[in-house]
Amino acid sequence: MTERKTERILALVAVLTIAIAGLLGFIRKADDFELEIASLITNQEVLQVEGEGRYTISGRESEQPQSYISLVGAEGYGGELRAAVRIDPLGNIADFQIISHSETPSFLKKVVQKGMVRQLLGASYADSFDSDQGIDVISGATYTSNAIIECAKAGSRQIAKEELGLEVPTDIKTKFSVGIPDIALVLLYLVALIGIYTSFPYKKMLRWTTLLTSLVILGFWFSVPLTLSRINLFLIGFWPDWHDHLYWYILVFGFFLILLVTRKNIYCSWICPLGCIQDGIGLIGAARPRFSRKVNQVMKWIQRFIAWLAIVLALYYRNPVQLNYEIFGVSLSLTGATYLFIMTGIFFIASVFISRPWCIYLCPITPVADLFRLLTRSLNKNP
Image 1 (spheres, rainbow, N blue to C red):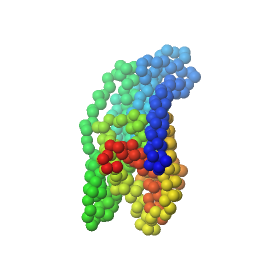
Image 2 (tube, rainbow, N blue to C red):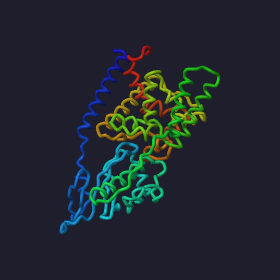
Image 3 (cartoon, rainbow, N blue to C red):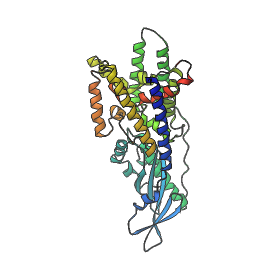
Image 4 (cartoon, rainbow, N blue to C red):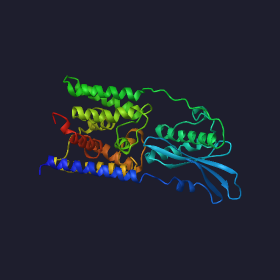
């Protein structure tokens, strides 16, 4: 059996197992929220369902409501973040508990430790829930912060309107806007396409320009690189409102569309911020490929297996970072678990001697691109 035929068979097996994991994950999706709610009240309190996602809490010796709980969800960085918001009879937030989430644990921990939840306690349903009210997002974890704020606002206003009969402020829909990352990404894709299809003396300089631009804007400034966790989100079925998340649609679908049309992975070679860091470190020790073809072949299949496992676990547990081994967060925003800092240090040291070791030996984007090209080969006239 030829290597190409083996690859095709394994690719089909990978797709089949991924589909099964997604189906099983969908079946087990239904959480029992009421079990979670029960843990939020004391033995002296009685919980009563008032409507979908709404509960009243009273004392065992009094039927008068002492407080209310609203179950709400909002879009975070890693998917839907759901919370239980406890409201007092005046419409103020008395407690806030995150029930479930798909955020990167280190980012959520950062948000909580920096007092994001504490800012919300005591806030009123009538507040604007913005910086004017002293509620600020945590730098480096904007999406997670905004999800928590949105849950607090939605929960308090739901109780105020439905249970307390109060008039709540009307949310003003934000207009569609294009931000700096959106514009930068489109330009980077266009310049990279020009670079791979033209031949001129300054091609190497152009590539360094796109890499450094991406490192500054998409990396250090906004920290929005292409990651497997972001791809997993779409596979899980979390499709955020494109008006607010246009960048992610451009990034992910642009990546696959260019792969389909050109058969080239220009993102990794011309745009990836982490690739730029490795290339820069490699200049110190004149990094180059160091291992034999046989060793590289074995490492390639290990890389593919780990990426496949990460996707399967993400779909089954409906958590895009169930197997979290990507070092983008540590490299670009110094946020991540201790083991990720250790991994990052190892790969950065290796980058002095080995050309792009993370990209070649562990990054999940490379095997995802390989699988996509293999599955779509028949759609291209020039495989």
